[in-house]
Length: 191
Image 1 (cartoon, rainbow, N blue to C red):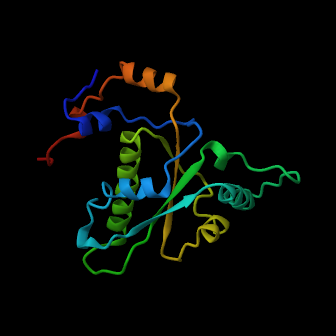
Image 2 (image 1 turned 90 degrees about the vertical axis):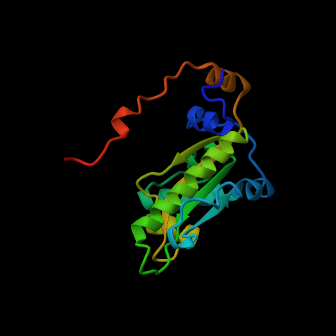
Image 3 (image 1 turned 45 degrees about the vertical axis):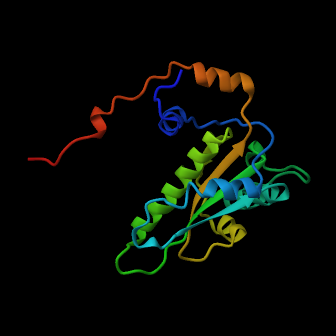
C-alpha cells in the first residue's frame, strides 16, 4: 500500500539500498532516458560539475585490480577481486568542479552527490536495485588513474545496479518499515 498518493514521493519514501542485486542492468540508452530526471539537480551557476562513467564486463575486473593494487592485496593467478562483480553495472559518480568565483568547490561536490542520489531514485523508480558503494581506496591513485580522473576531480563512489528478485520486491513493498520522525531534522535558528 503506498504511503503517499503521489508516485514520486512514494518512490522516494520506499527506496532501499540493496546490498545484493540480481543479473541484468539498464542499457546506456535507458540510462540516458533516466538522466533527463537527473539533469535538473540543484546546480548553482549551472556548472554541471559532475559526470558518470559506466563499468560493465571486463571493466569490473580492471576495477578489482586497481582496488587490489591500492590496498596492497595480492591474489593468486586467475583469481579476481569479487567486489566489482556484485552487479552487472557499476556507475562511477565523479565530482568535476569548475573554477567559478560564485560557486565554491564544496557546493559543486554537493551538486554531484545530488545528481548521484537523483539517479539512484530514478533507477529505483524504473525497477532497478541500487547500492551506492564507496570504500577506503575510492580515491587511491590506482583507482583514480583507472577512471581517468583529473587532479581536481573526486570519485564519489559507484552505484551498483541490477535486477531485484521478485520475492524481495514483494517483501519490500509489503514491509511495514516506519517512516522516520521528521522532527529532529527540522528546526529554526537558535535564539
